[in-house]
Every structure is written in structure tokens, then in C-alpha cells.
Image 1 (tube, rainbow, N blue to C red):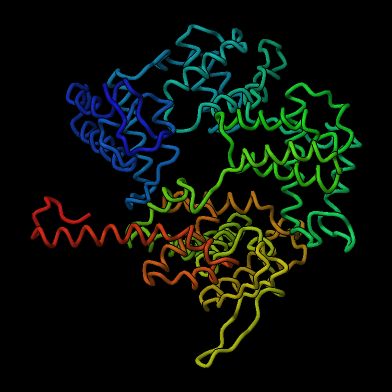
Image 2 (cartoon, rainbow, N blue to C red):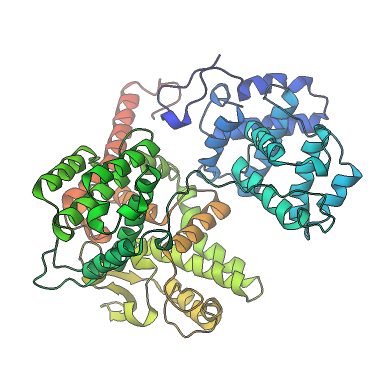
Length: 570
């Protein structure tokens, strides 16, 4: 029996009972494989444990548990290359299977029949044929012909994947199987094969405006327009216009509120205005829905929706004061007071504990640019240079994503002059910044050279030749959607250096690196990040210096002990 270490977060805890990587290591000598393969598997199992920052005795081989751990792993944090990480996962998976300790409801050992070979060949490319072959092996093991495949068989395959697959999520694989089956097999003119019912994600619930009452959509659009351009004498929450990104976020939250209420049983025809939407009897159903989705506890998203509903009830719908008071009390109850950095971000910053890892991350833009230069000049290499530029800018100008994605070469980059040498300055007016603070950052010549290369060779390929001076445009020359830009950055960092980094975390990385070299200089960090209040900066980043203080204290104790700590200071 194994138990989780007390210091590990709940979502990373091993099962209370079950086999672990340590058990698999014990079984290795009994595997009927060449010695080199046995050594590779042993190395992979220890490498897996090292990446997960756990003793092998605390790494479960129960596939759903191990899959969650691997999904949050950062091999780059221990300077493991991504090619090595792929080999580690492959060899570890093989060792777990050979051990016989994992649950295996239907081993894929039966060879494909001629009928299943023919089914796989219906797909037009090797990747999709491989997916159908894997499904075919499962069915052959069950002695099922292609003509016998129905929804129940797909469900059984999904269950098998959930209990055995360690890499991609089972949901992704089964969706691929069903999609390829319906595209290439079920449409066979012979009519021998039946289509499979697509899997609808249980996380997807938000309706579009076209699926909601027209009157509600009209009122929501009017509210959004008033938020973007409030009249000076209007009775609103503020006369200051909100940012377009804030208006878009509110629009999404309103659709989520309406969708949640409908899922909870509210008749859609009863939602004819925002006043109807935020009426306490209906709003309560939506808030309960979101709390339940979050495991029975409120979070920042629940609070944001309650706060939005309160503002609409008070200033837009002008509900009776007693109803506004009820919503105000609910908003108070779900207010998750977050003083400082979230534990998730603190954990992600632990990736950056060595100079080698920091250097690898900071050099990533150069690596991506050089990689693109070795490729043909096409949309793929253009996207690579665009992503390199985004990461490079974030490392020298820790912007919020909303500011990054609308950067314009003509508007935001201005030549400035210092006493020593001329340089280019990135200048963002307060009107475009969340905290209404002017931001200015000097841009190093190496990044300006990248910008010049990008505009001369690659940027026109991403706009389909629509004239644009935006750094991050879409195909029609408009600013790139935040989801797309965030995904490009996050995926590139993980794929190239094995680190889990999103654009906003780069702001925290910048503060971490600055305070390591300049302890106590919170005012400089406040200006760097554009915080209005220095207390916000202190709340978020004082913990960095607390960690350093604890390490220095450990060094003091170790020095007094004369180096007899059996491993040195922490």
C-alpha cells in the first residue's frame, strides 16, 4: 500500500492503494526482453519519477492518476529534452504493460483480420489509418467484425483507453476514432457499416446568441455598447469606457449565465432581458451550477459572474432594492479573496530554479527564429517567427496578453534617444492598459532586428496580403484572437523546452528574476508590471524573498554546524 506525501497538492496525490513505479522496477528483472531494453525501461521509470518530482514509490501506475500527473509535468525544469521525454514516456509505458500490474481490460494483442485491414485503408493518410488500426486490434481481440461495430463497442474502447492510455487523453483518441469512422468507413457505398454517435464534451454547455431569445441578445448588445461608450450623464457603474476585451468577456459570461439557467430548467422564453437573466430566483440556479462544476466551492469565475450580475441588476435593469440586496449578499459569499499569487502559478514558477532552465527559456525566441530560417518561407515558418517575436517581447516587456495582441508597429514603437545611444521604445498609452497606467519599455536592437525581418518576409504571409502594421494579425489583418495567440505561445514553450508557461506567467517570471538580483525593489517591479498600487506588487511577490530568506537561514545554520548536515543547506 502506498500513501501520498503530506506536502503534495491534493490533485497530485497518489492513490491510497495500488501499484506504483517502484513495484514495476522490482519486476524488471523478470521481463523476457534483451538486457538493453531492460536498462532503457529502468532508466525511463526513474526519469519519469524525477520529472514528476516524486519517489518511485509515490508514482501510481493507475493510468487515470498517472495521466493527470504527466499532463502537468515539466521535463524542461530538470533540463530534459523533449525527445528524451518522449522516449521516457514510451519506455515507461512499455514497462508498466509488461509488468502485468496495470489494469488491462482488453489487451491489443490480436492481429488485424483482412476485413479490418481493408477498413483502415479507407482512411487517406497514415495517421488516420493508424487510429483505425488501433481500434481494429481492440475489436479483433473481442472477435468483432467491422460490421458489428456499434456505439456500445466505441464505449468499451473508451473505457479500455481510460484504464491503459498514458499519453493523449482518452477523450481525444475516441473522438478521433469516431470522427474517422464516420468520415471514411460509415459512408462506404456497400452500406455494411453503421455510423457512430459523436461524443459531446460534458464541459461544453454555452449556447450561442442564435440559440437564445432574440430579445435577450438585443438587450445584451445594448449593454455591451453602453459599456464601451457610456454617456456622460448615464446612470451606470462608471463613466469610464471598458476595454473591448472586457466587453467581450462580459458577453461570454452573459451567455454562460443564460445557458446555465436553461440547463437548470428555466424556460428560455422567460429570458427576454438582462433583468430577467439576473432575477435572483434564476440567478441562484446559475450560480449553483457554476459552484457545482467547481467541485462545490466558488472560485474567481463564479465571483466575476456574480459581480457582473450585481452591476446589471443595480445599474442596467434597475431591479428593486430588495432583490439587489440579495444578489449583493451572494456576491459577498462567493468572493474568493486572493491575496497574492495562486498556488498553481507558484508551482509553475518552481520550474525556474536553475540558471540553465532560465537561460533555455530566454534563448527560445532565437531558437525558434533560427529554426524558421532553415525552413521554406511559408505560413508555418511565418507562424514560428511570429511566436518567437511574441515570446521575445514578453521577456523584455511583460505585457498583458490583451496589450500584446494589438501591438502595432506604426503606433506603439517610437524611436527615443538616450545619452549613450539611440534605441526604440515600446509605448502603450494608459487608455489601452487595464490599470490606466502608461507603459514604456526600451526594446533591444536584437528584437527590433527580429521585427524588421518579420515584417519584411513573414508578416504578409499571415495576413493573406491584407495590408496591416499589426505584429500579431489574423488572416484578414485584424488582431489575432487572444485564445489563438495564447495557444501558440504556450504550445511552443512546451514543445521546444518542456516548460509549462502561459503568457501571463511571463510577468511573474520577470518579477522573480528581477527580485532575485534586486531584493526589496518592489517599486521597480510595480512600474515594470504597471500596477497602480504597490501593495498589489508586495502581495504577489513578497513570497519570492521569503523563500530566499529561508534558504539564507538554512545556510547560516549549516555554517554553524560546520557542514555536518548530510547534504548541505537547502
